[in-house]
Amino acid sequence: MDLQQQKEFIRIYKQYQDTSKDTIKANLKSYMNESDLLNIQIAERTEIALQTIYYIRKNNSNNYKPDFITTLIICDLLRISITEVMQSIPELKILKPITTKWDMTAKQEFISNYENMNILELCKKYQLTLRTAQEYNKNFSRDIEK
Image 1 (cartoon, rainbow, N blue to C red):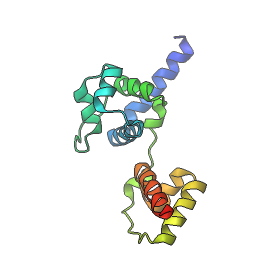
Image 2 (tube, rainbow, N blue to C red; image 1 turned 60 degrees about the horizontal axis):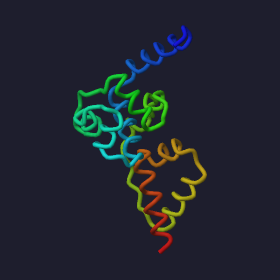
Image 3 (spheres, rainbow, N blue to C red; image 1 turned 135 degrees about the vertical axis):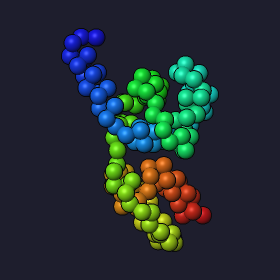
Image 4 (cartoon, rainbow, N blue to C red; image 1 turned 30 degrees about the vertical axis):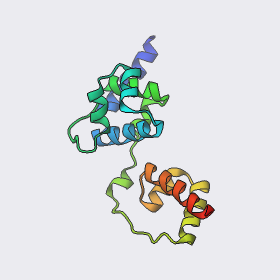
C-alpha cells in the first residue's frame, strides 16, 4: 500500500467510525439479504464468526456495530464498496409510514415509478425501505399479470 492509498484508507476508516451503527447495520443487512446467502454461507466464505453474522442480521441487537474490518470483509464478499454501507437516507428514518390503498391503478403507478424513477427517490416518495420497494414491485407485477 502506498502512502496515498494509506491516507484514503484512514479517511474511509474515520468516515466509518462517524457513521451511525443503525445506518451501517441497516445497509449491511439489506445487502446481505439481497445476496440470498445464508448466515452460515457468509460466515464460511468470510471466516467471520457465525454469531457475528447473526448479530448483524438481527433487528433488535441495538448496541452492536460491526467493526470496520468485519464490514470490509463482508463488503468484499458481496462485491460492494464499504462506502455504500455508510450512506444513509435520513429522510426515511424520520418519516412516518404512509398508508396507501393499493388498488390496481395504484399498483400500476408504483410499477411505472419503479421502472422510471431513481430507486432512492421512489423510496422517499412512498416512504419505503429499498427491500420493501423491491418486494412491492415483485408482488404488484405478479398481481397485474393475473
